[in-house]
Each structure stands twice: as structure tokens, then as C-alpha cells.
Amino acid sequence: MGTRWAQGGHEVVFSSRDPKSAEMQQLVSRAGKSTRAATTREAAAASEIVVVATPWRPTKAVIGEAGDLTGKIVIDVTNPLLPDLSGLEVGTTTSAAEQIAGWAQGARVVKAFNTVGYMVMANPEIGGDRAVLFYAGDDAEAKNITARLATELGFNAVDAGPLVQARLLEPFALLWITLAMKQGFGFHWGFKVLQGPGPAPRV
Image (tube, rainbow, N blue to C red):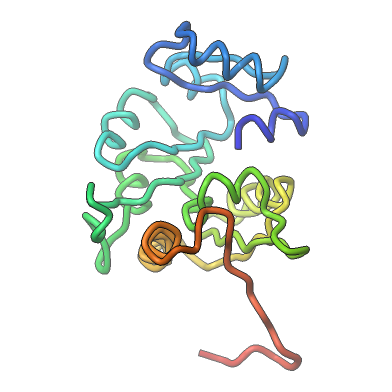
């Protein structure tokens, strides 16, 4: 995502425990001149939007390393998966996104980009259609900006409601993962919303 946003004209700072590593330097070289690598704290301080795309278990520590995120848009891409992908570590009564909002006090957290794999992020167009990208959050401006960033990548961005809806999106991500890895779907497929004529039903 960072590479594609950089190619679209955004300035992107990739965070790493070792920003001078050969791996990070290769990433920056591929991503283009508007990118650089920095520590987690430096990257967060330099950015208006912070994308958290870590494995679940170290996420709390990474949020702590980022420092003060007050006022920043934090896009949570994580899924609280068990190591064997058999289920979620948290869910039903809370979500990873809600926990991140608690750890990053004052940040404007949006859940997004967690219900598809990396191949879909690289190319959301599948069979002539755009894959759906659900997002959820409590801050209207942060959600609108997240939707624009998703649309720039080629997704059909769909507002799933307030941040509490992450309790649905994270299990939904597990469905994508199990279909991709265990049911033979592969990794370049996504969801699509089909809507018929007439007003949406009231719920």
C-alpha cells in the first residue's frame, strides 16, 4: 500500500526497527523518491496518517513505540489471529481496533484494509470489477480520508459504520483467510456488494 500511495504522489515513511537495513533500503528504492525509512517513533511523528499493519501480538508494543498519536488518523489493518489461524484472540465483545483506540489515546482510529490479502491490495481489480474495501470508525473526517486512500488504490470503499463494527470485520477477514488458504480460493480474490433497486431496508 505504501508503495502504491507513494507512486500516486503521497509522501510515505516506512517504519522499521532497523531503517538502514538492506531490506528497507531496497523497499525505499522500489517505492520511489517520495519515500524513506525511519524508526517507528520517527515515522509516526512525521506523518498525519499512521497505518498499523503489524502481526497482532506485538501491536501494543508498536503503538507504545510510536509515541503520542493524538489527533492523528490511525488506520488499523491488523487482525487478532491465533498463530494457527484457527480463530481470533479477541472478538465478539471487543475488537483489535477498539483495543488499539484504547492504547493510542486521542488518535482517530479507522478499521480498514484488513479483509483482503496483499495481492488484492496490489491490484483490487478482479474480472473487471473492483473488490470491496470495508472501513469503520467514529470520526467522519478520518473515515472520508481513509475511503479516498482506498479508492486511490482501486477499491470500492464501503462504509461499514462505527468502530464497533470492527467486531464484524475482523471475523470477516478470517473468512477471507480460510477461503484463500484452506478452500483453494487462492490469494487474488475479493468480495463484491450487489445492491438492487429501491431504498435500503430499515434496521
